[in-house]
Length: 417
Ligand code: HAM
Image (cartoon, rainbow, N blue to C red; front, side, top):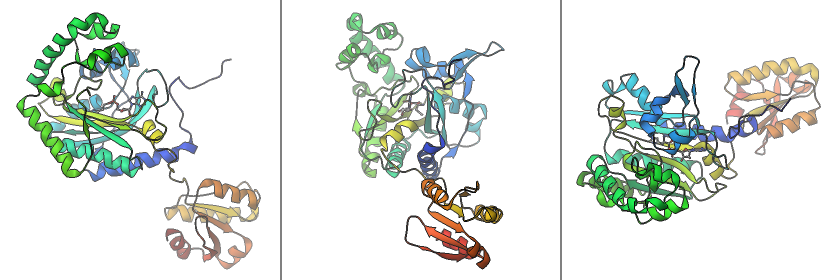
């Protein structure tokens, strides 16, 4: 029988690696909460139509990358390729626009795209993202970009580039589309097959094509930023001025379009330059999508958001230490003391410590090896002498302290200190 293996491009995450993941996820949760965001969890499966209508029919994600299937009832379902459309659906479905003027949501979870697997590009990958509904202003955009940069700093990822652009809105987009088409049509025969097919329906997609011949033609295309209407231009200027006031470095990249159709006005990406990233160096992508809620049949609520790929964050963090899984490891001197050890462990756990022991009756040497390997700060030793004196021997594996401490409040205080 063939060996059973995970699906190509979908990885297991074993306990040995999870400490680094927890560090990223917890730092993200704390940061998002500090900025006033609350967590939302939506289903991993959604009706296919949700993504077709929002991400756009003529995009790589919808045309080539979605995991779509019919369930037993004949309904077309898709494993979510991203979180924005699901959040907007939930926001509307639960009538949130009528309950509060501004909503700030964050999420963490797996997404699915059938891309060609490579380092930093997987078919199941995790995103950490935020979405704000109800605030149209550029200050909200600047705060969001700054928050991403602060978050990366908190993880020790400093060597990044923040790129911003504006796609304008309404009229601007229409005028630009015409100008772009007028430029691209004479080059149509030289474009890639995908771009030729997409040209008339979605000329913007030609600009973020990965094909070399398309990129060459796109380099001289008219720039959207030169076609911005007055209000769009003022919005973009205020975004830049606010980033300046925050001291957040950025570069305007007029060629930035991103691969999803729902964007309006502000667009941004954060790219990493350090670590082990390689070609997949976009850590974070986001932007405004002021039309989505209305397009879904709701009121005209403006929105902006971003998502970061957690695997790519980890690659950019190099050898960053994860959180140790344990605070204390208890070494039991003799097998007869295991019952006392279980009682002591429960006391420690009740006091909030992550504590464990090897209760198989192995040698002290082998238990100490496990204590070292566990990453726990404290090694505790329970022996006959300690038991008789109502004490525990405490050894700080990261410091100098080693001595006997009374089992009880004194021990808890010592471990807290
Ligand atoms: P996106 O640019 O498609 O945007 O994805 C955001 C991030 O997810 C990327 O920058 C990358 O770090 C990560 N990512 C995407 N695809 C993969 C993959 N195959 N393997 C590993 N990581 C990947 C969105 O998804 C939008 N929903 C962002 C957004 C939120 N816009 C507004 N709100």
